[in-house]
Length: 428
Image 1 (cartoon, helix red, strand yellow):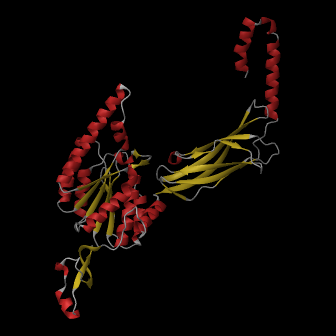
Image 2 (image 1 turned 60 degrees about the horizontal axis):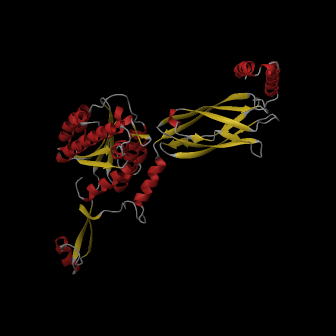
Image 3 (image 1 turned 120 degrees about the horizontal axis):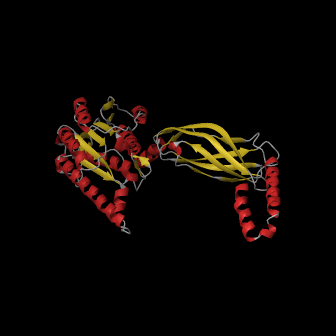
């Protein structure tokens, strides 16, 4: 305030020297008022801040958490300004920055907690400040909180999506039911009707029961599925607000839940610059808890991925023909060259499903109408990347590898749909 008074005093001295004698008096008066405002301002002694975080939170999900600040003294401010010390895992959270006094003399607000990555989320402190009654001074207080929340894969989202997939009344999603009339595994006998293939008639059973009976088949069970995760540098890049690896883990959990429910077996594999995780095969719905802990322990690293070493190690460890679902990413043809050679060798023994993450940023750059010369450069570069990626996908398809590229938000259900289609086609 005094610093602002200096140029004001100079201006008065130059343009209104007759009133300059009042400047020191006014400045002194303002200083005295500021001191009195600070003395009688609401004090921070006895200030409490109550915030209870949930124990766990799924990555990418949101939850509303209420908080309240209270003063034990009788002097209360009219308004509070708040800042919460959120770590980087909770940086996407939003909350009320200005709190009004409620009828119970507390200051209530709501924190919309959002987790952007897996790990320990923390709110270490609350920083509050308020003005005196005249608004001339600020009083600031830091309240240590040390509130923690464990951010895990979005298990509730997996259960919700799996429930929709298994629902008989679901008309929008995929109906996961007993795969009758598909596959080669014998299921039961049923009475023959004209709509069935006559080659399915069981003549011996028909003669025994004196009526035409046909064989009913279902998709085979006990197939082996390998979830292979690239946890290198590119998988740590964000995609629509979440890391690629976190989205891949969510898709793997949803697929694992459905596959274990149907009767297939699941195992996990992870690599970065070298393979570091290879779990044994699991079966039964009770194995989902084990799968959940295995995938929760995966984390991205700053290392470049070595596909040659990892896929050769995977090929050596998986003896029986399996469906290998590879979650990885690449930038251009040069970086994908060695990966293509390794996948070609792997596809001769196993059925490989290559999961490609569609980058909406690249799509938007290509579709945006250029307004500046820089926009044209970005669009050309994005088009070149898209063409190179499509060329890599074409090579993969020629090698007999299934390629799945779906919108980011629909990736998990698209993988389950593809898995069921391969199962119905008896390709596993």
